[in-house]
Length: 254
Image (cartoon, rainbow, N blue to C red; front, top):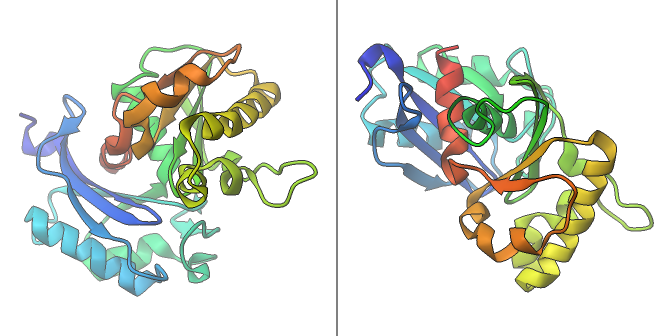
């Protein structure tokens, strides 16, 4: 078990759920149960903050400012400010999110893009650990998040779920996210054909050395990854739907 000085809390805010846990940063594993609450309807800042407080209360760390806290969020994040709003309220655009959470929680936090922190988890403790070259992690869920990592260094705030589809309305995530599969009741084969288009396109743009697929659906990787035919190796994230929690906690300690 990690010492108190090498553990932190990670909270992963998503379009449908908010998850959190205490993380052992010696091993890169959860040290507590994973707590999950629904993302409030509309996902406005005050409501999301209240839900995060509920997660911290359940974990028993609300009153312990010595336990560092990292928060992952589905937006471009620069200097603690959220500059976009994917699957959450537009009130987050241009919002001082990190300061808002610090004031509301009464503690210092580290606030970062959700896919970026998942990438950090896989670099430090998972499928990208020790991997040279260009690694591209995608999270398939309500949307498509992306993390671009070159020789172990994160290039922050890529938004490759929003690449546009020629001759079609909408962006990649509206067409190929896991939510599209659920919404349109697609078979694994039909969904995989959409993923084939997406990964082929991103492969053409970036020529990565490795694709890593995260998000909750990655636990079913055997149902769709074998259907993809790419020149780039593609594997499931080691930490799957916990990557956001683990990466957020890791960033909280620097």
